[in-house]
Image (cartoon, rainbow, N blue to C red; front, side, top):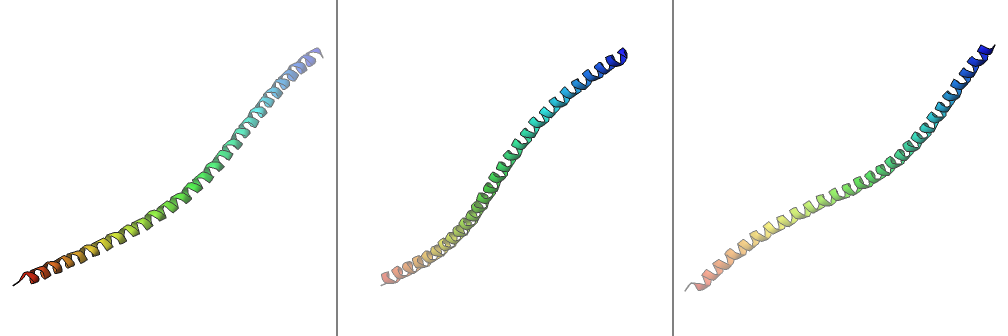
Length: 102
């Protein structure tokens, strides 16, 4: 009977030690869950920021495309003006030579 009680005490001690370890593990799991929740929050914030950046980037691309169109129009207009100035210069030279003829 005494041996049984001793073994029971040993088993009881081991169970108490296991309970302590389980409690420590539960505590660590709670800490890890807190960290995971914090990481989830940070990820949500980052996703929100990425969405805003993508939106701004789209707007920037649209503005760049519009600017490119305007630049092409300006270049086309400038070429037309240069041709007109060339024609007017030629006319002016012709008129000046016509006037100088005796």
